Structure formats: structure tokens, C-alpha cells
Length: 193
Picture 1 (cartoon, helix red, strand yellow):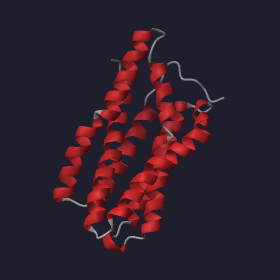
Picture 2 (cartoon, rainbow, N blue to C red; picture 1 turned 180 degrees about the vertical axis):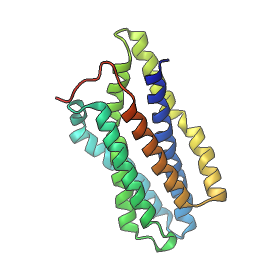
Picture 3 (cartoon, rainbow, N blue to C red; picture 1 turned 90 degrees about the horizontal axis):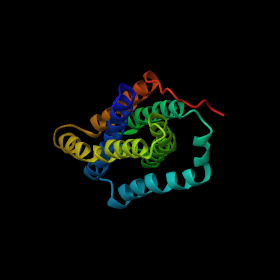
């Protein structure tokens, strides 16, 4: 695996781990702060449902944009959303509607990257089926493999730290992946149309 691919998959892994850790901690800390399970479930459900609707309508736009710059921009946007969540989180005194809205916006920004990341995996592969398959598998390992590490990080954060620490981790992983994506160069990078 070359340096570009390693950097890309490392950044994707970190960003995925931060997002999943945030979701694990969201449930625990919101319940601990006295929110009802229905309120927590509504946030989790909307974080999945709304992006599906948006990607169904506007997902084709990712085919027209520079994939690397799209990922960088959306990672920065997600980091800013995380900063907003950090400001909003006040335990039981949190403004639920504002917090839920920002959680959904953050999720939209994260999910809108999917098409661009898929394009980048194709840019790293050569024309052969085996190369495309190898990169598709590495993309899956980076995103799905982060689940175990997110669970361990969530367990640690829930046991010893706070929701604010989970949000800071989420923020940091977005920034790190954005910086990695900004630094790497894809030889065959397609310009925006």
C-alpha cells in the first residue's frame, strides 16, 4: 500500500471512529443527564434518516465536485458542528432542539462525503478489477473496522470522562482527517466539472 492510500485510509478510520464514539457516548450521556430514551432515539433516528433523504435528492452533486476538496470541506464543516455541540452541551440544561438539529447537520456533513470517498478509492486503484476490489475492501475495513475501537473509546469516555470529551474527540478526528486529506495528493485527481 502506498503512502497516499495509507494516509487516506488512516484518516477515514480516525474520522469514522470519532463519529461512532460520539454516537455511543451520545446515548449514555444523554440518558445520564436525564433525557428520555425517546429523545435520544429521535436524534439517532434522524441522524440516519435525514441524510438518506438528502443523499437521495442531492447526492449526485458529489460526482460534479472535486472529491478531495469535498471531503476536506465537509470534514471542516463537521468539526465546526462538533464545536457547536460542545458549546451547546450543558448536561440536563442542554437546549434539546438546538442540540438535535446540530447532531443532524453534523451527520449530513459526514454522510455527504461517501460518494467522494468512493471516487477517491477509485482514483487510487488502477484499471484492474483486483485493484478496485482491494481498495473497496480497505475502505470497508477503515469504516467498519473503526467500530471496535469506537466501542473501546466510548467505554473509556463513559467510564472516566464526559460527553464534552467525546465531542472533543469527534472534533479532533474531523480535523485530523481534513488535514490528512488536504496534505495527500491523488495522481489521477479529477478536477471539478
